[in-house]
Length: 514
Ligand code: SF4
Image 1 (tube, rainbow, N blue to C red):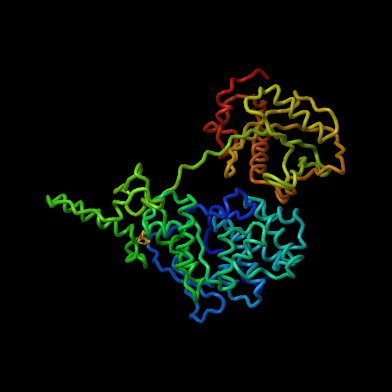
Image 2 (cartoon, protein in one colour):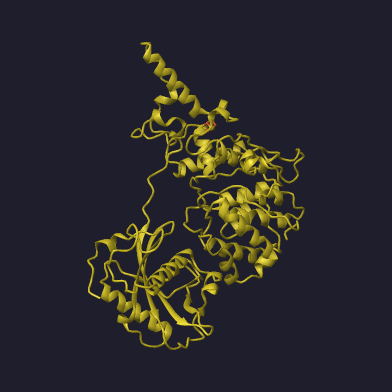
């Protein structure tokens, strides 16, 4: 295991919602968007303790209260970046921090821990990762979301091994320039934590802290604000302990300067905080008004118009929000709606249990290289009859034999929301009596349920299988053996499977004859 046998590493915090970098998941040139992080529980102390970075002479860092075990028990710190920072091999050190940072983008800490540990056990070095197949990477990444992150991590590892002599670039600029999937934030984090480069980082927590410290009220995702925040982060970073400083700043946002109800009274930088200062001024003004005193002359900075960092005139300060007036975000773009027909093709396996046909997605685009039930994107407002026909044609292409559209049994609709797509899977099933000879050249295979879950399949496909199993159980349980009709009222609160919601499309569509 990487540098320390038997040590389980624990990621310490979440990362920006996206730091895609060149060719990243969503584009955006590495501008991090705010992330809602872990908040402290009641009764926890608000310590923000920097951690040791490479070359630091400071005493060992204390684990912040927010990261202590419930009940105050003492245990070894289990944070990957922290342990990685003490790793003597510089390339391993950078690699470990890199994996941790990529996994934590848009994913909760609790979710990442197991993935991170399994990843580092399987591929403890860049060289080991470079030799892995995309299939193995996808299998380990399955369920973590944003699958292209794992793919690019592996591509980048191969590049380091084949083109850079196995050595990680040592500066933020070189990391961002040379490694696919490494954006400005990730590059800054690796360079400062692993290599002691005095460079700042801007993630969702840092955006919130800096916007409040400096009363930046313009849209926090606008280029003008992001550029200014990077300037501030680079100017503020401690030259002697940049990694510790950056982690402390992020930790401040994660534990004290939280999105809702920040703990200003306990904040170590409250004397420098303009948002807090503004709240105090507002309170003083309100009390002066109460006692009939004349209103004070406004500050010069309050009179300046058209400032690219100030709140827009149409969105004035809201006294009821206090410091949480900052940061401000532009209205979120609605995810694009998509419908996809998918079919669970089932046969009896040699041991009597069911087996399912799964096929591999193309090697680029959404969910690249993952396995799924044969699926086909649908045009909006396609009639059910037509929907069945196109799906039957699609299945025929995989199976090499005709498929009767009438034989497809409608199971229900499963909704899965990707970051930018609101996907509705229209789920059908087709039990097969005889065997089907698959084209060995086509990326398809039969799997048992166990093999299905061990394969590189998306969470959405797991939901589809769950919906199918639920329907199957319903049909085989005594007294409930009726076929599900399209448009029939699904079980529960308008849902066809647990945790899913009936789509508007399905809701509005009139029931059709079987
Ligand atoms: Fe955040 Fe309050 Fe601290 Fe300002 S004083 S940085 S608003 S916690």
